Image (cartoon, rainbow, N blue to C red):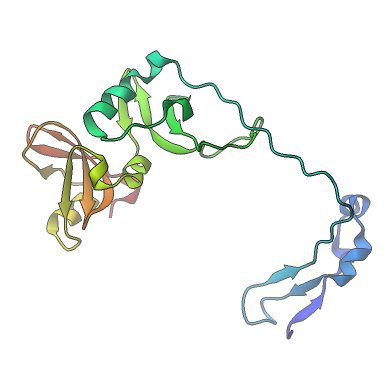
Length: 202
């Protein structure tokens, strides 16, 4: 392959040399971005040295929230969602409620960016749904939606953070564009309060 050169084992640090067979790097290849059409790569073939025993990962043991802690979530779910979510797979971390996958790995001691699907936050006894929950839902899974075509002026106004006029009962509304979830709004007195994330607004 044009641009392929030896791996240069002598570039390794003393610590690396003490913990690995540096000589095996003679069979590795570097592809330099300035000598190769494409991105730079380091290529090596890993060879298994023995038929060691395969150890199944231990499931991560978490403590589900207390029933009383989920009261705000249940009130939201009854009013907004048509389907039930498995509470036995929920975890509450610093006020944030996550829905975990049914099968999880042991992540004890690991700092996670996301524990699962962020459902929302519980603050002072009130549940506020997360944008990630909106994107995980379909229009038929919620009790109140408003749908506009992609070229509708109201979609542009929603994406720029404007409050919209929307007659109807008060409560959370899933905003969709051509049937696809876009984000949340909260209807109060015929006005839709915009809950599209500020960092995503145009």
